[in-house]
Image (cartoon, rainbow, N blue to C red):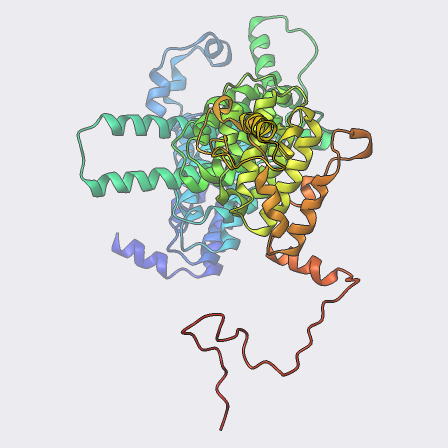
Length: 586
């Protein structure tokens, strides 16, 4: 073994190329095959790996159609013969001792070894990007040619499995697959199938891990980390596959395996019928019809996994990337309901997807508005996805068929939030309240409303005493709105008023105080008013407000005149005990 290893190290690139040429020229040099295989290793120099790879690929490619389906010669000889075997193979027993059959079985074992070595090189951290591209291209050629011109799903599944299980950054492989192979319909089709298999394997391992004896915390943490890494990689693969199109063009139905359309003639016997069914199964038309089903199975299976929080946030745009291409979108209801319980941005985007399922796919989802109401907290106006949430909020409250108590509860809740959010939040809240008052005339009394009991008592006292002004009542200033109530029917918003909006008239930010005046118009006359576009306010911030202010043309500029130049911002009398005088330099 040492002498062979030493001999291997002494080979030059030119000698290695000569070995490959000899192997291709004659079967007499078949012993060069194991030697060339020994150079397919992550430890070998890249140029030696490429040279051996090219020679072995050139050797195996013409023989792929002749190789047996398995390298196990003895098992294949002893297995029971099928009707197809009896028709295709000789009926003499001499075939069991045919040297040619033994030789091809040996070649198949070497080919399997070659594929295994290529997979090791593919996912090795020592492999360069160029070598990775060449190795992946060779494996994909075998996927195309090994199964008599039909897609070899087994090797392709091993490629994806090696990529997902590897410690190398998956983006390197995904860039190659996206640029070269995901444009083929059969590659996408079998990728979805493989992803579904991987997910089922992860689910089985997670279940079996839960049923085992209690392990140490370190072992549990390691298994959890491995599970999360695999989940992230599966998501990266799924997110990079182009989604199925409703009306696929001919370019979208191009196949990597090069299979033709199925034969239209009816087979005469059972054997031909089975073969035609297999051919029809892999035709571009049939794959295109079944693509949406495989897409749905892969994504639904993936979404059942215990996703890490960062993956939840990344799939927050599921309403744009996944829902339009599912065969049955309401199947996502359970996942979206679970996502809402996580809170934060995930809840916002989950409700966004649920709203699409309700409006476009007829999903009946109870307590939707209660969940939407619960998300109205000050932090949502500073969140990253606040623009999408605010637009969703406006869309959900657009229907004129909503009950008055519901519209009043949302209006009052927003009004209360306007006192504790940044100026940009106060602006968008004012716009939302403007739209709500315009859409629902039954809640316009919230703009100014006095308690009924107080008004009646005041009138009675005024009549009895004949005084010009009523006496002060203890109920003045009471707000019947319950801000912490989660049941929209019990908030008491219909008995309240929008006194918070009047407070915004004195807001420290001039754009807010100016914008509040838009609510003074009579919104019950819809013909004279138009709805405000929430998109114009939903992405606001201090920077946008400042930019709008400096671009604003001011008609009157306030000026200050001083008899003496001030030396401090405040007078000492304003804050007793404090000194604001700037010390004079000597």
